[in-house]
Amino acid sequence: MATVADRLFNFSAGPAVLPLPVLERAREELLSLPGVGMSVLEISHRSKAFDEILDRTLADLGRLIGIGDDHELILLQGGASLQFSMVPLNLLQGQSGAADYIVTGTWGRGGLKEARRIGSAHVAWDGEATGYDRLPQADEIKLSDHPAYVHITSNETIQGVQWQRLPAVAAAPLVCDTSSDFLSRPIDLSRFGLLYACAQKNAGIAGVTAVAIRKDLLERSADSLPAMLDYRTFVAKGSRPNTPPVFAIYILGLVCEWLLNEVGGLEQIAAQNAAKAAVLYDTLDASGGFYRGHAAEACRSTMNVTFRLPSADLEQAFLAEAAGHGLSDLKGHRSVGGIRASVYNAMPEAGVLALRDFMHDFKNARG
Image (cartoon, rainbow, N blue to C red; front, top):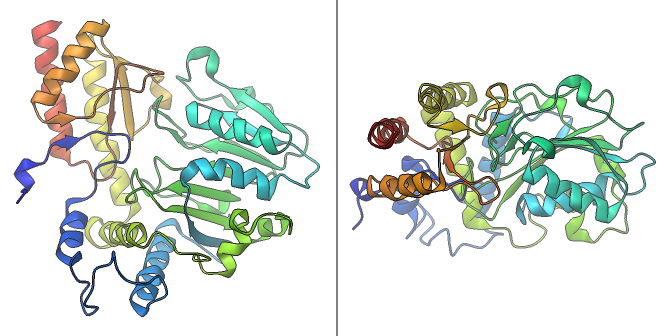
């Protein structure tokens, strides 16, 4: 049987490392849920057992993100990629204004591409010219007249840039893909018209997507929409108009319990995440240029630390030797190259310190 000692430090951008207590709880309950007599993999999505799991998960998730009377919280499938289409299908069609996109990386660009299939989309800013290594200054953002909504990506997983302050969008609804920093820090949900996130970064495993949508925006959805592309369907059916991803919702629930009961909430996890990221950024900054961060300092992500070495050969050697030290999945995305260390909520401090020590040793040997 595998033990904790057998586990590598998993720096993958997603699916990503899970909290050890969540894995242990899932292992303990996998054969038979307490008081149920069967596995969570077997129970009906209409059963009392799943009723309790779903209700508890939505309640705990709502507590973490501060859901209020103005928003609905629903769980869907299809990941953030499906939301790239569902957002404009529900919020853009039938509106007089364009959808505005502030494009800060690969995922923002993906959302823009899908919006253009559905209606008029306006680029309010695009960081492609500098390789998406920074976020825009306030005066660089050029919104259209009366936008239907303004879309941002809170954290670009590939480039490693993250919004620390939300942009001003006047009266337009702010729509945010927060997939890769969801549940990593407190949010003010009142600032968002719609927020969406796939689970497999900080919130669980692939298969479930959370959406918080302002209730008044539900009125924009046209009756001609296919039912499974209409947010109102999921609100009316309590997140299960069809068979939902029962196990993924169960894991999301366990992650929420862990954040609330063992970590102490999002302020506490945010402090832990900032401290972990600072260890790696301090290592980059102290390397004399041997390690070169991709993101501008003011725009650095606490989730995905991206950097280059002096040559491609050194990067390959770094990756190979890191793997030999139990440091896994550090290869950067092909569009950026180099190294990417994803230090999500569940990455233990020990993993970050092990990477820091390896980076020191590698630089001393090869620098």
